[in-house]
Length: 259
Length: 323
Ligand SMILES: Nc1ncnc2c1ncn2[C@@H]1O[C@H](COP(=O)(O)OP(=O)(O)OP(=O)(O)O)[C@@H](O)[C@H]1O
Ligand SMILES: [Mg+2]
Image (cartoon, rainbow over all chains, first blue to last red; front, top):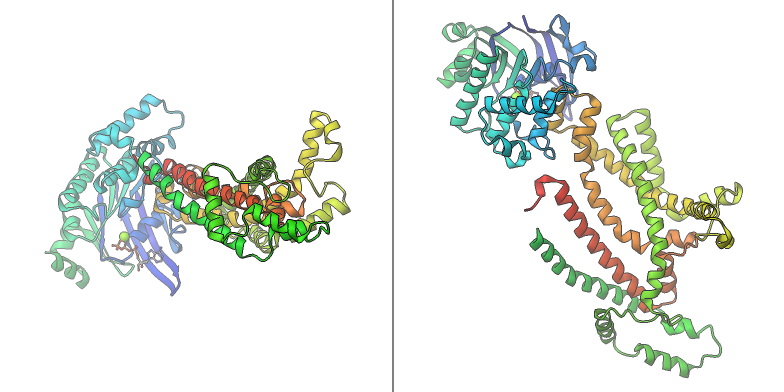
């Protein structure tokens, strides 16, 4: 088991009271598998991602209970400086709707380099630029020089998406979390990005947690599926089982709605 | 970029003229005539010579004609002569410029040195003891009237403790002092006025920086920075700070007119020989040429400050950079 959530509950404080966004969620992700969480909008998928990345506080939320175990340790109770060594190196994330996830006043190239340098102090200029170029090629970006010298607003949505994927995989992590990595892209670009993630997964041997609300995507790209509904996981099983023999009514409904 | 600059400069011309027109009208509508000030306290001046003065200054003409004449002269860079002592208004203003510049540049520097770190630290440690204390202090600074703060500080440091001089810019024996002595003498005179003029804007600026920083720290790209594994320091210094401090360019640009116009209140309270005090005296004496001269320079510098700030901003922020 590479990562497991145990009885995770997260709530947000809002003007209209406390919203319990995730309620007693547990799941296990085995090494090398593609674990997909599906669910409608607002079911709490991104909240789970935030909790894994230690960003719940920043969202104005609070982890009420539970653990997220990684390498025998609970990420949620780890000191910040111990945890941050894992992020970007062992555990990486591509956030949902990435348009606003690049710093608008820093050149894209520098933002990518930073992801390497933070975990490899004193890396030589030459090694750094070769790693960056290699990774940009991996995510199928051409015209590398121009892109590295651009600011985020000068790039297209798909290019930014690829940059963020590049940043996430550049240190060859064990675990990649992709939160609806294709929202906001046209159909062709969606397929490209998903295939790219799949290809990288094969090549780099990483474990994938992918979030989607699309059952077809879940079916095509996953080994195991967890169905989320109203902050809870209603059903979790292998793809085959979910699609051939769904247990809950909600899962049946999701499958029917999209077939 | 160049075209944009030309356009901005052209747009400034009607604005400048508008500002001078308003200044002129306000001045004209204010009760009291320049000739009253010269003649009423002087028994020797007869009403005949008063008439002569009025003719000489063209004060008997309708106001629009007076304004037009003034405008024509200014177009040739002639600001006229002071009604008070007959010296060219431009010369009187330029004389006072260095003192005002010194005071205001120092106070802007002081303000930035205090307000930026305080604001950033408050935001990063929101609701900490420091943040609460800073809020209270800022509130006090903000609500204390400048003249009151100035007087209180003068009483404490000037009268009770006797550490600092309370008026002027140098001592009587300034010319006899050594170079170091001169510097120290000047510094002592500057401490209170610089501090007081930084005080009010310090409060506003530190709050502004705090809220700007808090806003930036909520942005998505900060999440990316944490997700990369950066330390808190790196997130703040490499990612948050530049975004939060960009608006400072505009703020500093907008404070350029204050640099020159000088603060009427502070310079008057501290008998500081700058342009603010010159302006105050000129208004009291209805010395039209000097008032208008200061008005023009302030208006010009305001526009200049605006344009410079916009240009700098467009260099600093890639999103609005022009080709
Ligand atoms: N920062 C926040 N503050 C307050 N409430 C929030 C916040 N983020 C999410 N929520 C609430 O928590 C619930 C779960 O949100 P979450 O973003 O996890 O859903 P999601 O499954 O990712 O949805 P989507 O498919 O639309 O991305 C929703 O009801 C949402 O309104
Ligand atoms: Mg989401």
